[in-house]
Structure formats: C-alpha cells, structure tokens
Image (cartoon, rainbow over the protein chains, first blue to last red):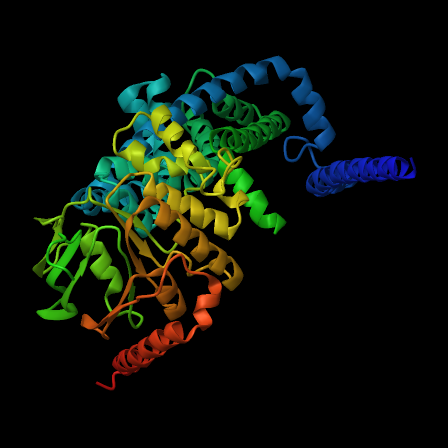
Length: 287
Length: 269
C-alpha cells in the first residue's frame, strides 16, 4: 500500500516537473520572441519621436520634411490609391522574381554540369552586374514599352546573380566523399546531382533567396519609376513632382513593409521546404 | 592459400601514379598483390597517407590503376562498381534524409522503387540496433548508431564485398569496442567478404582472419599475416599471449614504416 502510494507520488512529481518544463520552455520561447521584436520597435519609436520633435521645433515646411504623423495621416487618406499601386508593384516583383529564379536555376545547373560553360559564362554574368540599372531601365522602356516585360527584365537583372552564385557554391558544398559514395553505388553524374549536390545546395539557396528578394522590390520600384501606368515607383515619381514629400515617404514606408514581409516569407518557405535544415541547426545550437 | 578455392578478390601487382602536372609523377601505389578468400575478413594497416584509400578506390572501381589488375571472382573488375559496397570513414548520412531513407539510398540509386527500397532496408533495422529510429534524422542519433546506420546502408546493397574505410575511427574507445563486437557478430552470421582499413592494430587483429601491412608511400605489401585465433573472439582474447605476440609483430613492422612515412613528410628522404 505504502509502495503504491509512493509510486503515485513519484508519478505526480514527475508530471509536475514535466509541466514545469513545458511552461518554462513556453516562457523561454516567449522571451525569445520579445527579445527579437522589442529592440527594433524601440529604436523606430525613438527615431520617430526625435523626428517629430525636430520638425515641430524647427518649423520645416512639409514639402521639405514632413513630420511622421503627417506622413501617417496623409498616407492613410490616400491608402486605397497606395494599396492599388502596391498591388501592381507586388505583381511586378513576384513575376520578375519568378522569372529570375527560372533563369538562375537554369544557369546554375548548366554551369554545374559543364566546366567549359562555367568558364565561358561566369565573366558574362559578372559583367551583367556592372550594368548601371539607371542607364538600362529607360532603354528597356524604349525597347519593350510600358508593359510588364521591361519591369520583369529589370527585376530579373538585379536579382538573378546572387541566386546563381548561391546555387553554384551550394552545389560545390556537397561532400566529395559523398559523391564518391554515390558513384560506388553506381550513380552517374545525373543521379549524383539529384541525390547529393542538389540537396546540399538548398540551405545556400535560401540564403541567396533572402538577399535577392529585397533587391527584387527595389528593382521593381526602380523600373516603375522610369515609366509605368501603375506601381509604387511611378506613384513616388508623381508625388515627388507634386512636392508631396509626405506621400513619397508614405510610399517608402509601404515599400519597406513589403520588403520585410517578403523577407520573412522566405523563412517560412524554407521551413516548409527543408525542415531538416532548420531542425539540424536547432539541434546544433542546443548542444 | 589452398589452390582449390577461387579468391573473391585478387589484387595483382596493382600500381598507381598520379600526374602532378609539369611532367612530374607521384607514385602512390607501387606493387600491391594479395588475395581475399570468400567470407574472409582482412584488415589492412599502414602508415597515414600511404595509399590505402587509393587502393580502396581502385577496388571499388572509383579510380583506375596505372598498372596491374583487380579480379573479383576471377574476372577483371577494373572500373566496375557493382561488386563492392563501400563504407567511408565519415558516416556520410545525409541530413535531409531520415535514417531509413539514408539506409535505402544504395538501392534507390540502383533503380529499385523508393517504397520497396525502404521496406527492404527497414527489415534490417532490428539487427542493427536501430529499430524505432527509421524516421529519425541522422543528427538525432549517437555516433555509434550513425555508424551502424552507415554500415546498414552498405550491406543492404547486397554486394559481394564490403570495403570498410576506418569505420570506427571517429568513435570513443568504449563505443568502438561495442561496435567491434557487434560487427564480428553480424559478419559471422552473414559470411560477408570484408576488407577493413584501420589505424588501430588491436582492432585489425581482433576482427580479422588476416592482417596486411602496407609500406610507406609508394605502398606495397610489407607483411601478410594470418591470425589463427579461434572465433568467436571475446574481449579477453586481446590479453592472451597469442594475440599479444601477433600484435607485437605488427607494431614493430608498422612503426618502422610509419617512421619512413614521417621522414618522407619532413622531406628527409
């Protein structure tokens, strides 16, 4: 009887301990979340308050520097228009980025399979990155008009390169011995790529993806700035010409939010696409 | 060896040099000849960097020799890969595959449908002490378990020859002893033909029917020594006089070669 009781006691204490651990784990996750989110919020608030005070005390004209509160209120009034333009920009960004991904994967795989192609293409790819977008974007409009195509091309041009480099380096991260192992199993170059090189490259791919997606938004806006019917770029250009600095800045704020959202989205996609990478990292950090 | 048994593996005056460029050649393997009988366990020891791995790659068909021949069951096997399964020192379990997916890799690469390959690999899990870990990821396993999973991936391919390149080199000494005992057990049950590269003389003697000592680079066979100890062997045998005698013989020869290799590395030759 007494042993049964003591067993129950032990079980109870164990349950309590497990509950305690769970709670402490949850509160730890909570703390981590806030320690990630709080510092940027605090900094933004401080900068905004300082800015507001600066504009108030110096009496700068809003055409020169509007206060943050003015940017917010004026931006809110124009919200439907801004959202319409944002939607157009988002479309250009995503279509351009999709195009960029297709090109980058195609190039990277071709380069991985062929050393002569690598030697032949790499200098051209690097050269493509030295083209000043400011010079090429207007030409794109002359060549391809005001439609989607020139913008997709500009977004592609500014985003494909980091992805190609990320992929090529990722493929080469594959362990040489792993390739030997695959060959000993009878794999040819194609299977070696599929079973070893491709999965090895995925973590680097997602890193490159994060870098590129932020360029993509800027690229889309730049392409629109030069000439478009809709989009945050052309909206900024028009408001600038009307001396509506507040609305330009409101559009800038929306751009920033859009970029951050897309950036965070890449983490989500990574976690769904390669859950093992995330788990492995967490495991390593825990040790 | 008796002439009536056909050797499973025959290395016949194997010879390999690498072109270092500029007309300079480096001879890595000078002249290696030895046989391995079917079902025999042979250990190969030699100084670091002596060309053991090159020899392995040639047997596995990953590299071609500059001269000489490799015969498997009497047929030349140069450049052919289907006879041997290869287990490298690193476990090389892919982090993006679960243990059962890793174990089935060789079968999948060989063209077996994914499901069938995984089912076949899963059958061996209990024997390899991995039951219940089919869907775990490699980084969730201990070092010993990972090595067993790597060996499972090797044997499930059903090749005639197992090439084990320092499979336990990265394990702590206790785990290593456990693994040696376990390997001895499964080897005895399955009558595999196995060649083991190791730096550990005790391990070489404990597991093998025969120990081959290679010279410093360029590698040739310095000593080909039978280990006539009864099986199954237990840990206590490692202190028996017969065992110690063999061990001492090997230590002496190996250290002589190691010194030569060391001198080579320091450029004293």
